[in-house]
Image 1 (cartoon, rainbow, N blue to C red):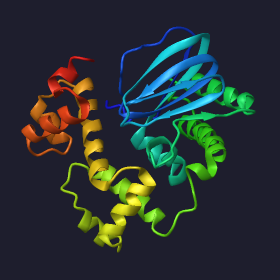
Image 2: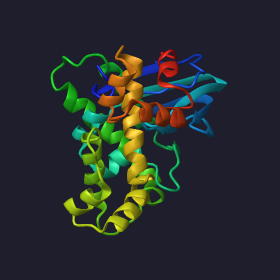
Image 3: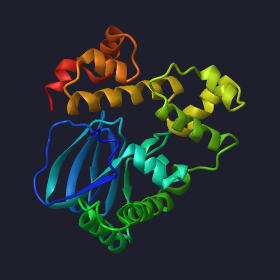
Length: 269
């Protein structure tokens, strides 16, 4: 099963962690309880300490390095499809996946360590027990609380007062995520939501951090990575299921974005 389909996994670490660059087609939230570590997200390196939350989207490759021990931390892996649907609050989901100008992956949650520690402990307890009564409702509620605390902390820096079409942009983004295998044209999307195509592109980039064209490409690449890591499908079939009609174009785009061919990337699993 692709990683975007699960609801969540929660892990606790108190020692060394993997140093190699890695990827999940899922959102990742790390909560540092104590110690310090370095987090490299794409080409940016961040140093974080106790009581920091780190948000990584399903587009972003990353790796960690312990700087100061004991480094105690929780890792939360969230399936994109189910979390987007269950949270159903675009402003909160935006923290997980959108990267507008000024976005900071690492948030200092000073003064809220008691409630955050309790929330992550509960998620760890619930992890791996999806058969429990109201599991989905409880887990979603806890994740929502964590995101609300983060939203309140970053406030205006990430969720500034937006002009009209904000909700339409979120809906278009969701539509693109659900129809990424189709031939999506910005002009057609603009017609569907009665927005000028040029203004749609401007607003989409402002709200999400990506142009519509790049967002669609990265969505397809993320799906392709997931299939390469979690299936034995032929590269041509991976290309087709990821929305690329031409295998050669898929290989070219994949190598440009990832730095290696699909076959070489598969060998990293």
